[in-house]
Length: 386
Image (tube, rainbow, N blue to C red; front, side):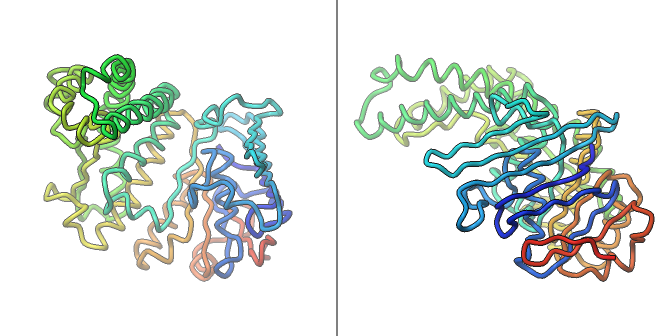
């Protein structure tokens, strides 16, 4: 998959921007901080993942003084099939977000996910390897939602059922109700949580095994085989031996019996896929989250993202686009050079890069011939650097 052109209207400091004839390999956007470089990548994220990687608020993307934003993105698949994706966000009230693909309006935003696979790497992603379990669950969700429509549907239904179940438990805590009092209300949602959580957990467990060789290979490319990574899936933060023995549904029912009184006391669901973790290790030692060096964290993060690329390409049958937002300023010279070398070799398809410094790219890439393009971004305006 590659993007041919991208149009932005009223997004942050971009009033009217169109970038046509995007290069098939590396597209570099350079400029000072606040110029609007990241917004280009955010627009691609909105046109593929339905949301920005940089903010959870769509409204925050709308340019000051405007009440709407629009994106017009044109993609071409590996087989040469053209797709036009348009995003229209009206601030309202009420806020309204409309997505169309080839002039056909989508019924749900989730229907867009997976059509044009994309991998995003930003400095903030370092929290994946060093932060709490929620960040690694989010990582799995982003990858698997693009790779599997079934996973995405089960994950969305699980979240919906969990929200309803939590509302009942919160009210029960507030009014000091017993399990017997709330059983008729909570049991239907408990069954839905178990059903959908089981499918999510089973797929995450399988993903861990499928992802491992991609992570090992990618880490070797980045670190030149100086170390070896590993990962382990922990459903609800527990060893998955029980999962293998009982199956996901049996595992969840067993855990529910253990925690039901505690759930009532705390007013929140303690059983489900929202409590999983993906443990990361280097050289088989203690968890990387607590014991990896700063350099190891950086290497592991880049390897995770390159492995995500390889996994998505294999699972979807389509080459993902790679979005690298200001990551070269975070990496040391050797890691930055290695990442750019891998992107230049073409193994990672079409790549979009933002940076405040164009030196490394002018030194390493040739912008003649059309394989790579260099753009300058100044106060929301984009022009090709010749």
